[in-house]
Length: 137
Image (cartoon, rainbow, N blue to C red; front, side, top):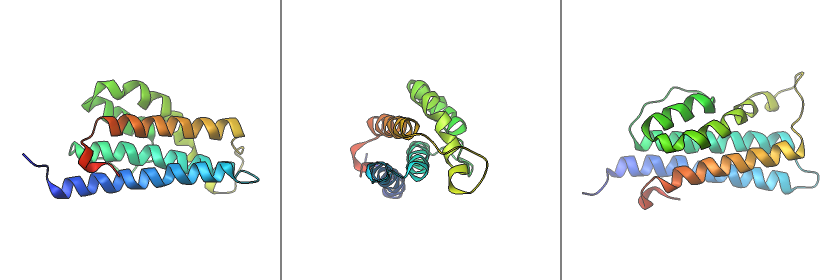
């Protein structure tokens, strides 16, 4: 039986945006000088959108949140094999808001920005591995 075309499109669109955020993060990090806060922010966005793609595909409603721990727990409730990757990416949530505004927080280091990208890419790839090929960007 073919998949619901609207569901395929919506899931695909979340994944396409996640992929764009990963690419943006990598380009920002490759710049001279590297733009660490924006790279970390786009890493968080990529992981969030990958998780939301997974939840969308499974018709699991989610709230408007940037908390990767909350979204990851919802993903792991559907597929427990996502627990480890969801737990490891959860700390990247901190890059969702703070780095975009002036404040007392510290800029991520190069190593932290690289790790954020790595964790986000892992989340994205693990989600992709669990979804049908029709939704992949």
